[in-house]
Image 1: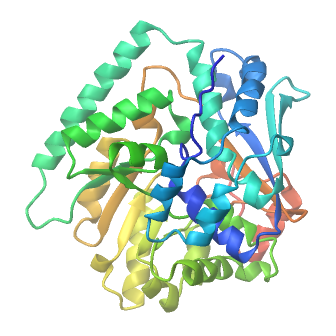
Image 2: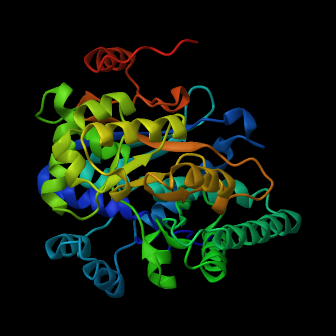
Length: 402
């Protein structure tokens, strides 16, 4: 079996932007990541069936290094620093830090344990591998035909939305965020090429750095949950972890990459920490769980309270979107904000088969539990319920009613 991942650029931009901060600010941090499939009951066959192939692909992955043209591409991104690219020139994923096996209940079990500067880079590769190996076994011409039919319908839709834009509206902006849940690398590339060709003024970029490089479009991304979660275990008071994470980001990027992620402990707790200082420094906010309309209305009230013109700020939506949902959200918020959308599974794995809902999340840092308390209860993730209860108490977050 040949390698599925051929380049260490075949991952999301925020892996590089976060890794740069980790390397510069807390390079000695140890971490533990754990894999979970949220919809096991929907799988056609057990994910454990792909274990041997996955282990072989991980062997291939850990042989990759960055090529000279890839390093040069990263050097040309203005927010990437030269010493970081020098580090990447020496970078190679170490096989000893990742273990894939079968757990006591017969499920596919993946653990990554090691220095965060290594461990955090596995995530997107591993999720893309699990997806591609899983769907490869149930691929058929009919499936590919259905995927193409759905893609063509989306292309017509995005062109109609482009025509529906009013002259004075802020632009309707869509990007691909689908690397981790893609049907295959080839399919993701096909989708991005078709969208960019059909509507370049709407379809602005992809989170996938390799595809951005190859297709000459913009790489998109800032931070993910793991960046903020890590600060729950660093040398700051737990109550101040969000402020510490945002401050560290500002010190590293000094005005670049200014979209802050809001749902590590929920929007309400985030806004309590997102004071005038941060609201002026950051360009906007990213939504990744909970009701998007309610979330955006809260953001609007918050900016108004701080006497900031919300029309100068960007809301980026990235939770379970399709084009129709994105367009409706754009219509709702366009008079109050600039708005953009990152669409994942619905772009890169809409083939008529049930997509996998898989994650690989940071659960421990420096020997201490970390957690995410999502605005969508099913997205909350930790391996330590005691710590989760403590985090709820510190941030005054009620346990959801069952």
